[in-house]
Image (cartoon, rainbow, N blue to C red):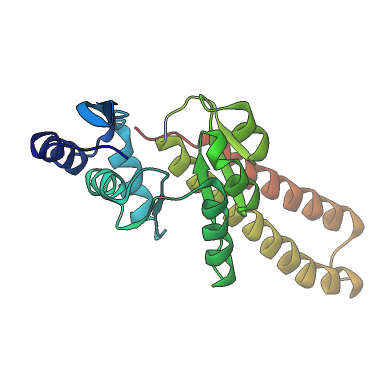
Length: 217
């Protein structure tokens, strides 16, 4: 440790309250200055968090920074739940805890400290500009590095799942009605074959609607 003057201590507290990580510079056991270090918050972060929240998802900030810094960042982007400071192992433990509560967890990260949590999560999402370790541990890579694409990926996955379910309902429903009709001889083989082909065309066209998906922002 080192001796910190009241002036430097006030400066350190002020910087931390603004969301900066602070490093104190000391000489011979006495603090002679301090450095404020911060990663600028991406302008799109607040928009991305807002869209995730409106989608019915709970957002959690798990950070290796101090609690004061993490809470300030969370306030700026709109996250209400904060866990900090967390080691890489503690981040993974947080994911395990959420999963034990019956939650499906998607983890977004870009650093080597996030790799264990990314691998543990039900869906690990790495930002493309992150480390190779984080990318290798993830299931999805956001190549553009824009966090808004996380919300887009979730929106696309939901639309895809809805399309799959719709196709299954159609296929089972069609066959449940058409097979008894064909077996009863109420329609000829040619008409039955044509109807089956048209059913397949419907499934293909319904799936093709996903090609119209557009990114937001």
